[in-house]
Length: 176
Image (tube, rainbow, N blue to C red):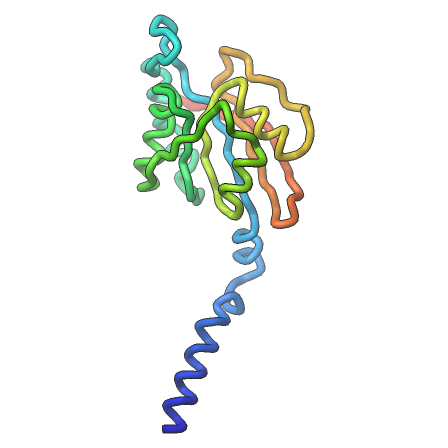
């Protein structure tokens, strides 16, 4: 009987010490929040305020799957517009995730961090919002709105458990 109790206690202790088996990199990653702020792909110009993607835009949306192929993504989120949801859709499908909608009028970098702390998030937004989120998370204003014809730039923001952040504006050239 003593042996059974000892085994149960040891089993319980080993279950509680799962962090001991993790590498420092794994522990750091768990405490890191990463946002990819991506503008929607090319949109139709003759469809009013909520247009669909052009054929080029559909190809760009598919190319984001390749970019994220070896990256972990916990959440794919999009504003509630046809063009952003269509840009996010291929990645969400490839990662077997639902597209989560956010209200572009109320979202801030800080509210996004509060909701997704410790996660990796691909957020699909707009030329005049994704820069704001990056700026807010690093308490700066260095990133300006993207030019209306700019679909190549995006922002990567990493925030550690203490709130220290690092934001970069990156450019990707998708090959047809």
